[in-house]
Image 1 (cartoon, rainbow, N blue to C red):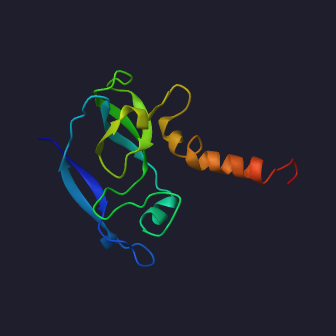
Image 2 (spheres, helix red, strand yellow):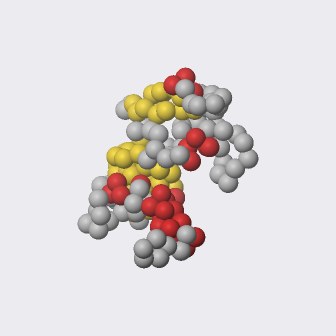
Length: 147
């Protein structure tokens, strides 16, 4: 059985996160079921919201549970598919966590077209952080020429 690695939340940080708050584990690469895809991580985002997800304080997003893979956006390649919308070699983006391989429901990932932009841009300028900056600047800040 092929092995993969993942970082799991080992404990909730008190103050700034420490190396001991995460644990590197090996696990067997899973097989996708019907409607699922097996993805190999190519690019992983590292964003400020992840610190909040390490806490169990009330928030807009569900916290990462102790023992679960650390949450994070990933660009991955489909390795095996049980969903007719995806074929091996397709590139996708989704919330797959800090792990080498993940199984996801087909409806929870978005296919990328690498002919339009490099796939890793789905994690920054063409992803959540880029959209947050764009709408913050133009819809909230209402920036005008010369500002």
